[in-house]
Amino acid sequence: MEFPKDLKYTKEHEWVKLEGNVVVVGITDYAQDSLGDVVYVELPQEGVGVTKNESFGVVESVKAVSDLYSPVSGSVAEVNDAIVDNPEVINEDPYGDAWMIKVELSNAGELDDLMNADDYQKFIEEEK
Amino acid sequence: MTVRETFLELKRTPLYGTHKSLGARIVPFAGWEMPVQYSGVIDEHLAVRNACGLFDVSHMGEILITGPGAIKAVQRLGTNDIEKAVEGQCQYTPLCYPDGGVVDDCIVYRFGPERFLICVNASNTDKAFEWMRSEAGKMAAIRNVSADYAEIAIQGPFSAGILKKITDKDPAPVKRYHFIEAKAAGVPAIISRTGYTGEDGFEVYSAPDSAVKVWDALMDAGKDSGIKPAGLGARDTLRLEMGYPLYGHELSEKITPIEAGLGRFVALDKAGFIGREALKKQVEKGAGKAIIGFEMLEAGVPRQGYDVAALGVKLGEVTSGTHSPSLGRGVGMAYVDASLISPGINIDIMVRGRALKAKTVRTPFYSRQRGKIPA
Image (cartoon, rainbow over all chains, first blue to last red; front, side):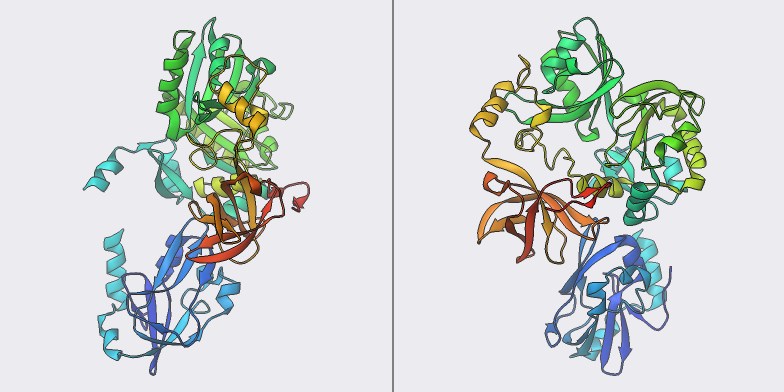
């Protein structure tokens, strides 16, 4: 299982990558593996606001429905519509092609609350 | 703490260690720790449709009814007519309460007029056993023999060829819904041409301490045919594509076999079975509610409990739903007002507050011969 060092992580198994004042958000390798075959994803529209720890979308595997929680607050700058048509990409490339949204931060301080790769890996091992 | 205690009470099949070593994800199901998936639900699903899949279904219960009154007991308990089955034949039957609600749905194996083995759902084993004893215990000897049997289902187009390699009798001539007693991997087994996937296949009952031997022999015999272990996840998507009912979803103490569209398993011309009057009335006067199949017309996955509506009026609820791996879209069954019983009616499935378009269709959703069946 992969935990890229340049990302930050949440306890709800989302990852965040800082690109200037915008962050890219997706779900982790652990999350996609736990879900199993992803068959559906629902993402917000560009321009809408998202709030830290609140649901911004839904991902569904064959068996289960899971909420996606925003790691940060801000407004949605870009949405990866390609994964809506091909949700299986979430299983194949969770840290790359399956990024979900880009968020323009309203409070950069929120990033400090996120875990680094080592802490996230430890968190998962404790959760098991 | 409660969670941990509950977990300790779960039962394990003799194949638990095998599942772990195959990398299965284990979940609690009907009081058992069962494999939900190995390589992935869709991969396992397609293996069963196109090659072969192996399922551990040892959690299923077995109840033995014996003695001179055995046939009378079976006739009183089941809605189907076991007189229509010969020795060596199996028959699907619901067991009903007097009001037509369902105790369980099961498969009756007719060994002879004085010996029947009944395979019941894991979640209902104790309830069904108590029901049989209270309603027919004076007519015949009724024993819960679930602990005497492990059960492995081999399902998919290559099943007969793979199974033949490990049995002392060729299973190929065994007709659908018939069974034989033979040796599998050198141990005594009951082999029936039955299953819950819509594909050709067999279910193999053996003593629990022989289960690993049978499983390993089948996996080895099928390795060049693409055999894969398959879990409860694929079992559910496979049965759903066929429109097969699952107790607790399409059948329950509230949903009768007539409402579920299983009238062909209710022998109203047979006297004296439990539930006959109530079911006869439903057939004659109409049930008012029905289980229907539907297909999503837009992206979205229907799930049990979602509302079904038409023109803004709630007409029922989804009983089972999934993303169909064979069709690549959402399909489901629902318990609804009988006005929706015809195929081709536009309905809405309420998903998280949004009305998603769907259409009623005939089941099965999938047919091997014809591919997708048009509505």
